[in-house]
Structures are given as structure tokens and as C-alpha cells.
Image (cartoon, rainbow over all chains, first blue to last red; front, top):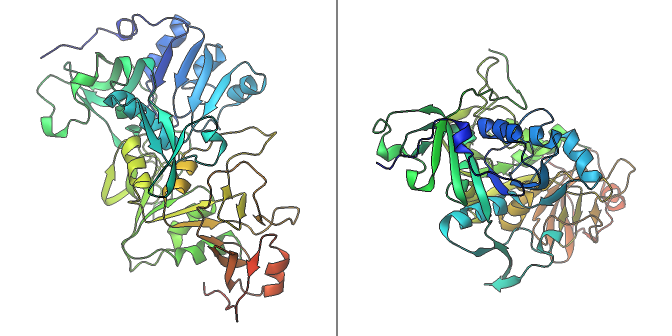
Length: 233
Length: 217
């Protein structure tokens, strides 16, 4: 067993510096690497580019980095829930690249899998395709999209072991598996770090080979963005 | 004329037994409430779930189980969770049978605009561009005109596009239309709405052939 375990979030984020590009898992506030984000705030790294489907809310998730003006550029598919984000974007302080959600996922997966680029129909004929190579396959038009190139991936899983194996829960899975092994260093934080051998090898979602560092997060708030319920009966 | 629930009810009749369906935010979300109970349908949400159920009972909500609108949901027996790349493999690979989404504008050639208004805060396209570029069967749920009474069914979209030549059918508060090579082909009228009313509310080319029946909701 190759040991990926680090003692805490500080050790996990060793080597993080200004002007780096990070991938961060999560959809909305579900499955975000809460502990890595808190440490990025504490380290006060500046000028970073974040690849993340969303940008958090004002006081949680990536909104915490925005508050401290740490982010230079966001690459996302939807950023609708954050007033500070809007203010920084409109003032020109923050550079924003909006890309289709499936393209975002696939650009992660391409980086993970060793594909430099791929063709997708998403965005053909729209401003997303401007300046990009397009090509006809079997009578349909496609846009060439490139793999991401990031320094760190910060992902969050439900359970993991010291070998770096990961298991996700529910829709908190989202972009997290696609970002594993998609950057130079993948840092996985888990709700529960379990003994090696206790995870069923048949049920592992991401094999440890894609993870360089793993630790158990100290606390998880797991905030709900839209609480929708029905009454009993 | 139909209200939003009426539009959802009419679209629900397009959902067939054995369909995997992706519902957008807004009117499309309501469609799930009106699908016939004697057919088997599974709803996909692009954040990574197939087999979505209703909202949870108060107190049972789980931050790890949400839909693409970030709302807490439940799953039904037979449901599955998956990552974002696999979710869009279902969409791009045309494994999802029907996509229902809203629009700001639709053009007579099937172009759709639903993500950006220049000069206003742009929130992003989310999965809409992937969905419209990939799905074989796309139904748009929308109001026929905007608040100023101007047509949203146009010769050409004026807003930045989400996708080109992709919409197959449009259900509005006034009519059901199919998009053909020659324009919007009128299929059905909403209750109490005349063909003339629909013509007046449609800027794009409207094709009217024979008697146009009233919708059955």
C-alpha cells in the first residue's frame, strides 16, 4: 500500500502559492472541499484561477476567497448566487470565463485521462465557440475544446483510506471524481478516513492512483442552498 | 389561454412510457407533477442523479442529495448517482430521450436563446448548451410573448444563442407548434385562443394548415 495520508489540511496544501490554477469539486455547495477552501483563505494566496462549476455564496464556499479578493479568474458554468462575485465581475476586478457544464466536466476528465482536446457539439454556433476550431463529423458540427491544465485539484469525498481510494455520496459526487488526477497534485479530503482494507474494492469510485494526498476534514458544515421539503401525509 | 401549470400539463402528455427525461428549471420542473401514473419514466438531473423523486419530508432533507436547481430532493427505487462527466455522457450521447427547457426566444429555424441578456448580470449557461446541442427531442416551455406583449417566437433570435437549429417543439400559453424547415407549424390552440390570436403573437413564420384543434389537457 502506498501511503497518501497527510496529517492535516496544512500539510495537504503544502506548495500552494500565488497565481496558481486550482480545480475545486462541488455543485452549488454540495460536495465542496470545505477544509481546503478554509485553508486557502488562511494562507491568503492571491491571484489564483479557480475551475469550479459554481462560485459559492457570499459567505460560504468560494465566496470566502472572493471576499478576500484572492481570485483573479473563475472558470465556471453558473455563478448566479453570489452578490460579491457580481460586484467584482462588473467592476472588472474578476475575470470570468463561462463554459457549458458538460464541457467543464469533460475538460477535467480529458486532463485526467491524457486527452489534449476533444470535440463536443455544445456551444456550436454560439459565442462559446468563437475563436475555436470547429469540424463536421457525419453532418453535425462540433467545437474543439482543450483539457484543463491545473496545479492542484481539491476534491471532497464521503469516505477514503490512506491508499487514496475514494467513495462519494449522493449528488455530492458531481465534479469531484473528474477532477481527481486532473491536476499536478490532487488533494482529497474526506468526511471519514477508514482503515485500509475496510472499503470494498468493488465499491470504490476513484482508485488511489489518482490521489496524491488525503486527509480527514476536521468539520463539515454541509450547508443546504435551497431547502425544499413537503409535509408528511 | 394557459397558465404555467397548463403548459406543464400539456407537455406532460409528450412524456411517453420508458422515457428518460431531463427537466430544466421553471415551468419544466412542474411537468413531473402531471405525468400519467400508469407509465414508467425516470427523471435525470444533470448534477448527477437518475430516478429523482419528490422533495423530502420536512426534516429528512440531505445536503448531499440535490437537483440541478440546488433543491433538496429524494430518489426513487432504482435510482443511481454518478459524476458530472457521466451525466453529460448520458446527455451528449443521446441516452436521455427528452429534454424540456425554458427559453427567452425561439426562432423559426429552431435556434434558442435562454442564457444571456446583454447589459445584465450573466449567470451562465449551466448545462443548457450541452442539452440543446445534444438532445434529439427538445421541447421548449415558454410564454408566447414577453411582458411588453412582444413575440418571443421570432424570425431570428436577437439575444445571444444557446444553440442552433435544435428546438423541435414549442408549447406556450397560446399554442403547440412544431418547428419545420419552413417555420413554426401550428398544431394545437390553447382553450379559448383563436388562430388569429396566435398569428398576431408570432413574429416568425407561422404555418397554418387545415383546422387547428384545441388542446386536450
